Length: 271
Length: 310
Image 1 (cartoon, rainbow over the protein chains, first blue to last red):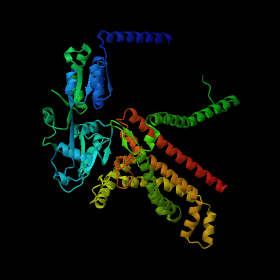
Image 2 (image 1 turned 180 degrees about the horizontal axis):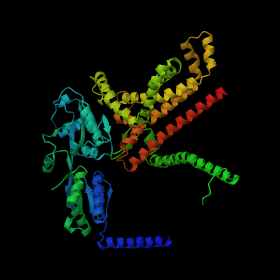
Image 3 (image 1 turned 180 degrees about the vertical axis):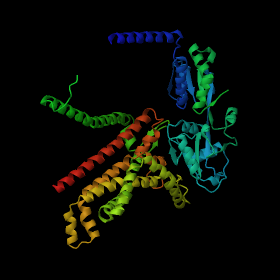
Image 4 (image 1 turned 30 degrees about the vertical axis):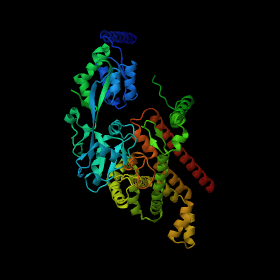
């Protein structure tokens, strides 16, 4: 009995040693550090986890907000700054390079019986701030607008309010805590309007054109659809000037696996 | 090795078995105690940092809830009001129906009728709360939307909610507390001593007079417990009302979209970070204190009832 135990232990130790040796052979990269946009948390968490599983290299992200992320990368305290908006000119002047890795698109949905086909950004902002309360003011029937949105903290809500510049001014009639529930409510309440990620729109609701442009992948890539924002991974200087570890990370993001992850979290990939 | 552990062998094994059994019972009883102590400790531990950081006044006595703003505000006064008004409304509707059902079941109904109603009440108690919510979405919200369109047709200041409002939540809560109120009131009524009823009837009181003048006053303690337990159930419910109440932070007016203490936690927990998350724990602490108060009141009522009978 004791002998058997002993031999088992020897085997276990031997396995542990060879196991260590195995991972030691592939050179371990320095961990890639990044900080920035809270909206990108879902994507970065998935990406960094897959990166670790695939290459055994670590990448860690903090979520401090887009502006703080860009500042941090320019100050050199992190390798990558995550921003969920396009860079400003003064940021580019300081050496920030805009590497757009994905695009976030938002669809505006109404119930199917609604006669309105198109809204401008301004009309949309007025609906959500409570200035416009009836569809007749927008060319529809005399029907009240039921304003449906997501709960505070939701990335979709953050993006929507940021793009329309109505942050914390919105007067929601209903704050729903999931995309699916928003879809269900909009489908069942006459006169309802809601926003959801572009990839979940189905035929239970009607997606509106924004400024006359249909929200689809093609128009988003062309940049003509208004309700979109880029997810940018900012580097100080071009990618080719970065450490090997950072270059490896970007290679992974651009690989098929990385692109798959971007799609899996409901985003649109950039060619 | 083959010794059989039996109390028949000698007194030594007997006492050992007794001791072991006692310890097992003790450990089982400790589980509940440990759970309560741990939860109380944890709620205070995780609920107080935000109170200190944001300020008690800014959380408990402000009605602006805007956690994701650049200058976030965490006032939960409207949310507290909503929970109080919502539970009170549910009690106003649910208790009369519940108590009268209990009277009917114990005093008036034929045994055949009781055989139908009683299982129905028990079934009502067993339905998962999320199902109540779904029923609310399908049946109550559309009716409420029609009423809303009717009442506020020419009112430009009213925000239309599509029927997800305080009234819908109150109706759902009133139905949900029915089984609690009915069951406890019924057993209270049944435990009223028979001689009181016989005395009243013998003195020429009618059945209805006997019920309202003799039986219900005598069962007062039990009925009060039923009401308090109903409040506890109503104030702690989340799943059913998150689906029907609209979930925006507003004053608890009947046709406003409202948020309760419970639904405030449920709806924002998934993405909340930092102080926002801590404030959600504070809301949990407030809810916890509410439930504690309700329990203390309940204990007082039951104790006063015991004193009366003694």
